[in-house]
Length: 181
Image (cartoon, rainbow, N blue to C red):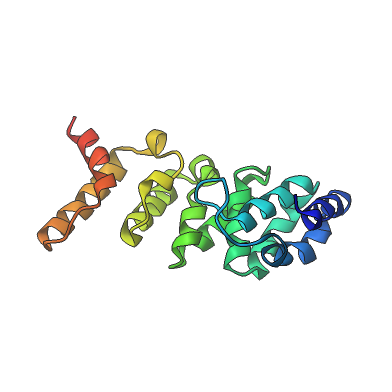
C-alpha cells in the first residue's frame, strides 16, 4: 500500500487541478517498474488511477499531456480509454502518432483510438505500429476495425519487405490470410 498515492487520490478527488502537481511526482513516489497490468508500468497504473479519481480530470488531460514528460503523456493516453473525454482526446492521439516513441505510439493505439479514430486515422496508426516494429497484439480493436483497405495496405508493406529480402512481421500473417479467404 502506498500512503502517498492514497493521499494523492483524496487530493485529486477534492480538486482535479491537484493533478497538475501530483501527476509529475508519481514516478518518484510510486515507482517506475513493471506492474500487474500487461504493457503498463507502476507509474502508468497510478496515474490512470489519479485520473479516474478526479472529477473534472477530462479538462486537465490536454494540459497534463502537453506539459508532461513521455511517461506522463503515456499515462494520459492510457487514461483516454477509461475517461469520458469525447473527441477531445483525438488531438492527443494524433500527436502521439506523430512521434517516434514506441511507448507513446503503443499507448495511443488503445481502446480510445479503436473507438474514436476515423477509418483513415486508425489505419495510419496500425501502419505506424507495423513500420515501427510494434506488436499488433497491443493494438486495440484490430479484430473489429481491420477492413479491406487496411489489409491492402499491409499486403503492400509485406510485398515491399519481401522484395527487399526482409522478413514480414509474423503478426501480419493472420491479417494477410484473412484477405486471401
